[in-house]
Length: 385
Image (cartoon, one colour):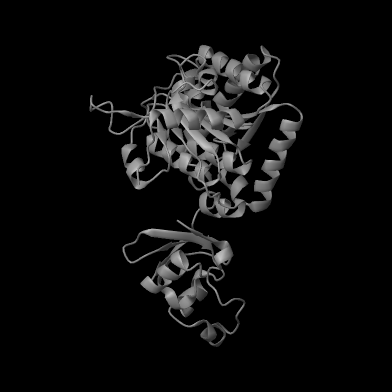
């Protein structure tokens, strides 16, 4: 399948989707926000002016921002290339977060806009009740005409609670509120078919129909000095947003009036079209928010049953179990080549599942002394990857 379109078709798709986008996420990273010695006030002022422009056009806008740790580094004069412990990163986030929000508050205030700070950890979204509470808070801020400014709560985040990067956070927020558009402003001007830093023949991709393995391979793994997410994380974020029915853009964050140029239909950066078939909200939560706590190795018959026949996973199709997990946790399913094929919410803990793997469902009660379910993963709680 050809996952790129002609310039004319890409322009038409862009103009149509930008015109109807009423709920927009703008994500900006540390590499854009920080200058040589501190936060780049010119970039922040331009960003605030552009988001105010979108807000004045009647759109609901969220800013997902990095920059707290980088701002803290600048304030206490720590070199960018210095290795930091988790504790040091948390302390620097505490130092820099107040500075970051102060600068945003001043910048948006020039345009008569009120902002609200929301700091999140992964556990805030992994818990379904808290996930919905975050959504309700954001929608209420929209009702008040306030622009939410969202960042990871680096001060308290541990490796287990982190989003991995703010590209991931931005995409999760986009799916959380069912945003129409996810705009990722970065220090590269587009996705290229090859690495433009090493290959002068590399060509920019203007429009992507679907994020496939081929598209992901183009991303490489380039990271900036200040950012945590390379192009691969941005491609993955676009894939997540597409599953929720939204479109995405990756492009130059330092370019003046970039948002106005985008919404005017200019062909800049790389645009990702939404999937034609939208994944259900709860299944997006299972697939993209929850972190698998274990792995189930399936035989060929079970793989075919859940991927092509829409069946639930039964214990008879499980060859092996890895990890420790409880009933209701998210687990990953892999085939014989260790390729991930599905994720889902498991109906048995790891200890009980090891006792019944490979057996027919009518043996569950005899082995465990009880049976609450015939299925290990019910198809309603199962997402095919």
